[in-house]
Image 1 (cartoon, one colour):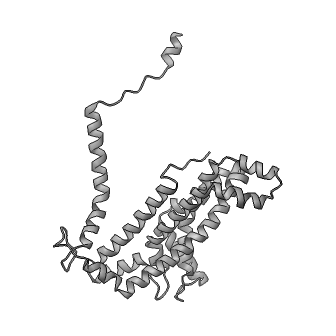
Image 2 (cartoon, rainbow, N blue to C red; image 1 turned 90 degrees about the vertical axis):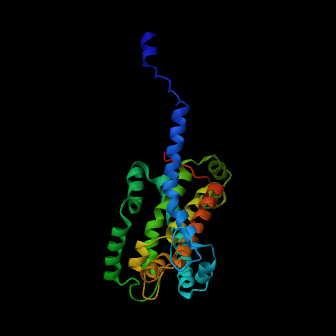
Image 3 (cartoon, rainbow, N blue to C red; image 1 turned 90 degrees about the horizontal axis):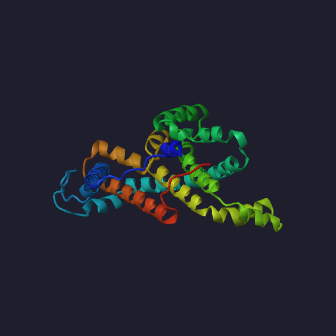
Length: 280
């Protein structure tokens, strides 16, 4: 009995009032450090002056009107929406198929296959973009023709792991008893998948799709290197604009991108919740 008591872990002591205050202050400082640049950009987008400056020299919406009246920015935003929607759709189709195979049929190769499918997130995006640039130059895939093919390939390559992770997580934590009940009642595998499995993993599908969309919408390195002639996305249009102009229109573009990202995160949180992915 003495040995058993000696082997029991000591109870974890909660921090005192001073420790909790210190922890809260540290968390507050980290949050300020992470959000301060974003808040500064948003504030500068309302600047009434002619140049980017902080604090703003008065408040005005003139640069948002200038943004929405800019043909180049509106065309770039349209291109970003088209590419992000297409990349999201393709990534979800491929990611769902890969997740189903990994969870249901991979067997002992499951962890190795999962690591292989996650490689685009483990490698620096700029190196992946350069490698893909050499590939499409060698094969002539969309380079120099003004099409979106090469850029779309790059976006799918990067967004695929986000779709795959969320669907695989939903399948790992999936109760298979409704599927078994459907099969016992005579439903075919395809009918069971579309009528039973898909509705039950819908939160994972929606979360993966939204993550894929926002990652593609904000992607810069891949878009910069793989864009065709006369084709540009919103991040690359902003980069080109700030090389020659330094007015708050650039801050307005950044603020719009932040709002799109924030809206997507809030939608994900309301749909599924920002939970940790669990495999196993």
